[in-house]
Length: 231
Image 1 (cartoon, rainbow, N blue to C red):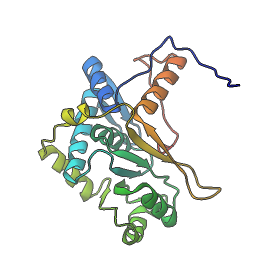
Image 2: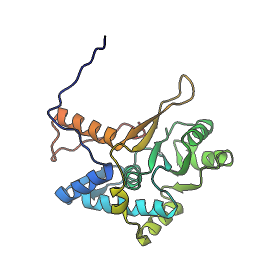
Image 3: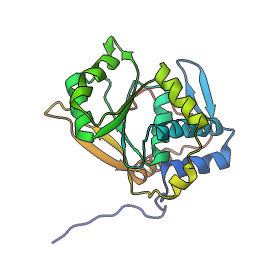
């Protein structure tokens, strides 16, 4: 005998993609503030955020990143983390969250297990050289083709390439589905190798939307996010 339960269905699920949702938000309230990085004082309106997201998305496209490719992000909380998450979503690429506490052997496992082809990282964090650990694992992971370091020349080159590129992101967006995989999040690996959970546009958007609805968020609220972006 089966037992089932169902929650309230009065409010419909969002059936769109992360990129399309951002574009729709810009159309509604493009001049509203979208992102503030307290550490540097940098601020973006929704329109400015979309412009930077699209530039980075086109920059990734010049590297050959396409729908379904795995792009790692290995960094503490920063504005570029947010930009990369949206940029990969615009391309239909799958963002792989990498724990900033990982050592080289854990990084190597995640790169290999996810099939990562590009990684965006900071050079170092809390005394650990991410750049050196990436160099250490690359020989054993031939799928890892491109390394972009935030705040370094490779990041500037990515942005510059995106500004000069004319990839039609709207056309790419039109070919994406809400159920497409868009993010891989790994467990801590305390009881064995980390395990990757794959999320879709639909997963992420509806989780955020319904949590916000339950807390009664409005467009006038500001949310401080001190917890790590990677999980």
